[in-house]
Length: 442
Image (cartoon, rainbow, N blue to C red; front, side, top):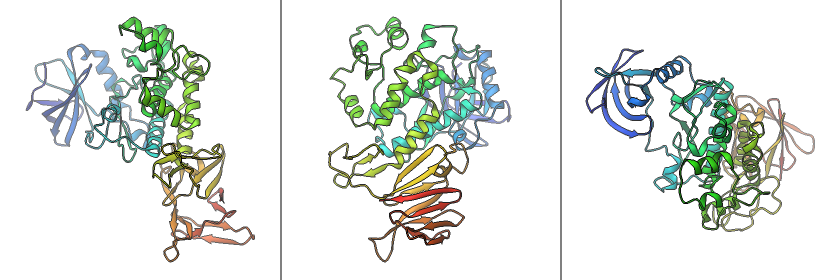
C-alpha cells in the first residue's frame, strides 16, 4: 500500500503519530515523505513491497538501538530514529531528521548546474569531512556498503557534509547482507567473487570513486573501454567495474585512457594538486587488485587538511588556488599568473611538520596542533591572522585560545601572548602553543 497525503503512520518506539504531508522523492527501495508530528517535521523513508522484509526491519531496528559514531563525525549521519508502520499494510519505514535541501546539494545538482560548484578550499573541506565520518563509522566496527553520489550531501558554500540513506549500514564484513552497493561504486572483488562481503576495504574503493567524481566530474574507470561499448548491459558493467578495470590515468597502462572528448575531466586532472593525483593513482592501480593497498580515510584526511591550509587567492584573477610545499614556482591554475606567497606557520606535529599559509583572515584550529581528527574540539578556532588597526601594513596572529602562548623572537627575547592578544608575523618567530612548537617562515 502506498502512502497518501493526510494519512498517518505510527512510530513504534515513541508511539507518536505522524501525518504525511508530501512526497520528497523516490528511489529503488521506496519513497521519502515529509511528515509532521509532535516532534515537528521529519522525513520518512517508506519501503516498497519488495524491500519490506524481516531482514530489512531487523537491520533498521539494530541501527536504532546502535547510536551513530561519536563527535562531529557521527553527527553528519542522518541516522534512523524510529520504525514507522501504518494500518492495513505490512509495509514499514523509518523516521529520520529532515534535510535542508535548499542548502545541501547532491553531486548531481552541481553537474546539472542547479547549485553552484564549490571552490577548491571548500572541496577540500567537503572531502575531509566525508573521509572523517566514514573513518569514524569504520572504527565503530561498521561499514556503509553503499557509498555513492546520491547518499552524500554537502553545502557548496561552507563545505558542511551530511550522509543519508544509512539504512544499509551493517557490521563490517558480515555475511548476511542484501546490499552490495551501486554498480559504479562497487569494489571489483565484490563483482568477481560472490564469496566476498562488503567491508571497510570495499568502502575504501567506493570512497575513492566518490572523491574522484567530486574532484573530476567523471568516473575513474570510464575511459576508452567504456566509450567504445555500444550496449551498456550487465556484461559490460561487470567487465569495466569488476573483471578488467583500468584507471583512465593509469601511468603504466594506456588501454583505457580518457578520450579527448572528455575535456572537463582532462582540465580538472591537469589542475589537480599532485598529492591528490598520487592518491587517486594509488587507489585505482594498486587498490583495484589489492584491497590492503587502497587509500585509507586517514590518508585522505591528512591530504585534504594540508591542501586547505595551502589555500590562497590569485592576486590577479582572485581564483582560489591550492599551494603544496613541493611547488617551487607556484602559478594560478586558472590564469597561470605567478602567485606571491604570504608567510607560513610551520607546526611540528607527531606525524611531521604541517604548514599553513598565513593569508588574510586565515584561521588556526585545534586540529592543526595534534592531528587527532576525531576529537570533539578538533574544529575549535585557536588563532587567526589579523591586521594592525593603526597600521594595515603590519600583520599578526591573534590568540583565540583560552591559554597563553609564548613567543620567542630571533634575538632570544620571549613574550607571553594572552588570549585575544596578537603577535606580529616576523620571520623566524617561534611560538609555543600549548605543547606544540611552531615557527613563522617568510
